[in-house]
Length: 118
Image (cartoon, rainbow, N blue to C red; front, side, top):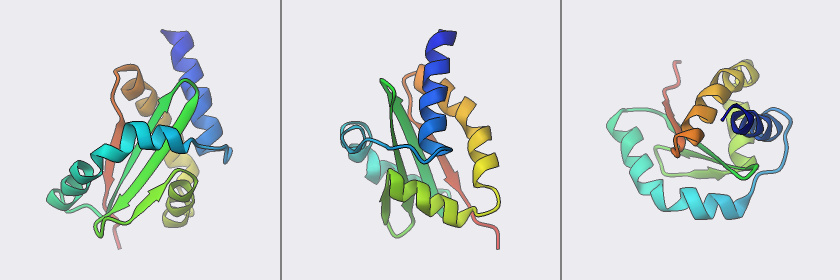
């Protein structure tokens, strides 16, 4: 299991920290059908946006969805998140990667809602 966890973490680091490519087909296959559910969740919890990340066979897909149901997919999601967290993107992703690995190993998507404190 540790070997698989290492592979997942490596794929995530490449995609999230090293601006590696993400896979549109993985987004469409795993994430797209759940958009309404995640959108309702952030509205219910009064969050500003949600981040959803998955990894499958060394491919990564990412979704950022806001309260207006604007979708940022894969590289656009990463860029949007980098612009929202200009000082903390790297450290936040470093904290998230172990959690994402655990979720993927448990056959779940990584999902987190985020509230912007102004």
